[in-house]
Image (tube, rainbow, N blue to C red):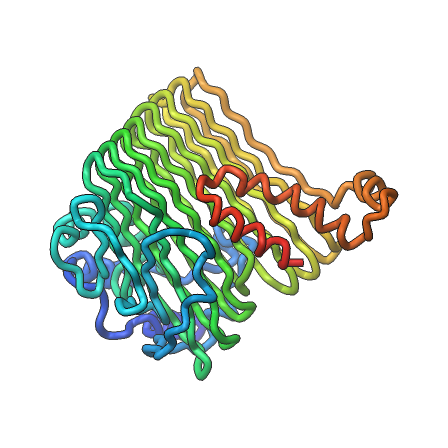
Length: 431
């Protein structure tokens, strides 16, 4: 028994060491030290933990990684979203590349800063908010990120300002020679009455294994709005642990689309705190999986005050031996009267060998609310397939048409047409 404990401790220590690249994001040294200290008491999750029951990290933890090196890669054009007029921030192997980025605004309307060398107007806000949404002892991955994140971006929208165009954050992993870890930290702060749109996408330039550990803290102030789209397109050897924490103030609006079309093992944690009255939150998710891909979406929505509205829709298409996990929880506090909260997870299995584990949950302590949750699992509509084929449409094309109509409901309300077209094209090419 003593040997087993010692072995696990050595494994834990070695795993943490793979993320410490030496230099990290600037400032907030006290917060980083607290997180590093908290790591001493945090363990790597196992399937015995309820929150990790269907996701086995054993093989990932035992694999040897090294912090990703700088890359000379420069040809980002194939990875940009076509026809999207946007500011562009480029990170390659987790490091900001200023010479490849293009930022056209002035700091009166938008503040963008690289966290490795943060300065100017964004520094004070960054230091004020850093670590406020994520507790240092939340879990081992969040603590590792807080202590050792290598780089990241701060986006600040001043009070009453609306960004002139979306902000595109492009992540490229260029690791042809080694198994690499990358750590990225985001912070988005939208001031009172402000509005912004952010699109973040992830791509692999090689098939070597990677492990990305990312944390994003988001603060949406009173009567402000943020539309956030996250598109995961990494290779079949790329794994990621992603945590997004959102804090919304009264009368604010937040929407997020999490589109997962790539990756080997992907864990998306999304936590939203609706801390004020009359708040609106939209959570949409899509995963299209094949081979032995494993994608695990965990969401938590906390309705803490009255007159809140949340609408959550996650859809999955799974084939081969792929596995999907959905665990969504809505918590309605006693003061959250007049809450409207809806949650749905719908899945289509294209093969009998694919797996889905779904667990929608409602926890309600207020008595004047409208809440619902549900999950479905099935195969493609055989009657619709027959109808299409009877009109001369080939079986493969008929299947694509039905898959398209099923999944595009998730992306239909994205306000940026270029982003919606980009996702639609990726979906068309997925199967």
